[in-house]
Length: 141
Image (tube, rainbow, N blue to C red):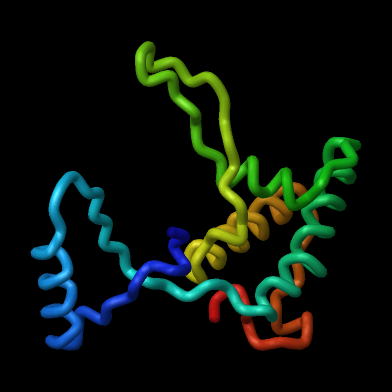
């Protein structure tokens, strides 16, 4: 079952809490239970700003600073959203994988945009704020 098909309980509502407790009580056997706070996904405006403004600025900053033609999206993901893949028998880091930006909630996406803005600024390219893109600040909405 995908995460999108999982039931969502508002634990501020007593009836929802009871439903969740009753659901867990009815389980038998070995189960993995995970409770995570539901956070919104980024808006269409934030997505448009990212692809139309942030990604091209990353590409230009890397080209201007280092003379390298890169995919700004892939560079940003690898720079800020990567995590190590560890061989659990040896503890050795055997590689890295980058988390996809579409998996980020609004808070994480805003932090990612801030990281990209900071990187570009350090390389001499200013990323215009979302307000200059014609929308309210979608990365922080």
